[in-house]
Amino acid sequence: MKVVDSIPLLRELISEWKRNGCTVGFVPTMGNLHNGHLKLVKRAKAHCDKVIVSIFVNPMQFGANEDLDAYPRTIDQDKAKLIAEGADAVFLPSVKDMYPAGLSAQTFVEVPGISEVLCGASRPGHFRGVATVVCKLFNMVQPDDAFFGEKDFQQLQVIRTLVRDLSMPVTVHGVPTERESSGLAMSSRNGYLTDKEKATASLIYQAMQKIKSAIESGESDLNALESTAIAELERAGFKNDYIKIVNADTFMPAKVEDSHLVIVVALFMGTTRLIDNLQIHR
Ligand code: PAF
Image 1 (spheres, rainbow, N blue to C red):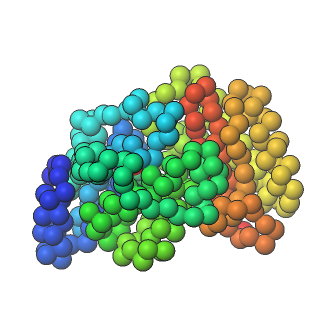
Image 2: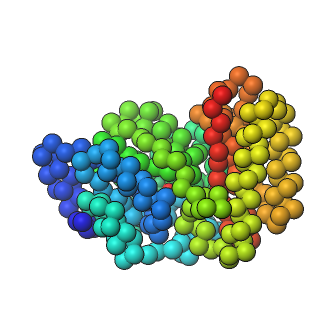
C-alpha cells in the first residue's frame, strides 16, 4: 500500500492510475478504522480498479466544545487494517495542507436546507466543515466513485446534494451501516462508552425497529411514535437530542405521501453523542 502524505505526491499517483486506464474509488475517513470503514473499502474494491482511503481528522467540522483533541488517532493500526483489506493507497494530509491560510480565512462550501436541521441545528457549522473538506478531497483525489457509510445518513445526503449542485463528476455510494451483534451501530465514538453504556446503547436500534414496524403496520401518528421512543430511551438513561421521522431526501418532517422515510436519532449517553438511523421504503 502506498502512503501518500502530500498533495503533489497524491496528484502524481492518481495521474499514473488514470494514465493506465484505472478507475479510482475513494473512501474519505477520519481514521480510527472499524469494520464499518473496512466495509466501505471492500465495496470500493469491488467497484473500482484502484482504491485510496484518506485519513484526516478535520478540525473544520468540530464545534468549539466538541472532541477534536480527544478524537482517537490510531494511524499505525489503521494502516495495518488497510493493508489487510487490500487498499492501494492511503492519503494522510496535514492540517496545513488542507487549510494553508488557516481555518478562519478558508473558503467554504455550504449546502443550504438539509445542513440546517437536526445534526446541522445541534452542531452549527458541522456540515459546512464536512462539505468543505469533502469538496477539497474530491478536487485533490478526483475519484470516479466515493463511498460513505449510511450511519451518517444526513452527511451522506448533504454530500449527494453538494455533488449534484456543483456538478461534480463523482458517483456517491451509500453503504449500509455495520452493527455489533447487539444492534449498536459501529462508530469511532463507541470507544468512549463503558461496557454497561454499550449494552444500554443497543436500545437505540430496538427503538428504531419498533417505530419502523409500527409505521409498516399502518400507524400514521408519527409525532406520537417519536415521543414514545424519546420517553423510553430517556428512562433508560439517555439524554435526548432528537428522534425524528423525516423525508430521506430533504430531511423535512415526513408526510403521508413520502415513499422513502428515515428514522434519525441523536442521543447523549453521558457526554458521548450517538447517532443512528433506519430507513423505511413504502
Ligand atoms: O464521516 C467522516 O468520517 C467524516 O465526516 C468525513 C466524511 C471523512 C469528512 O471529514
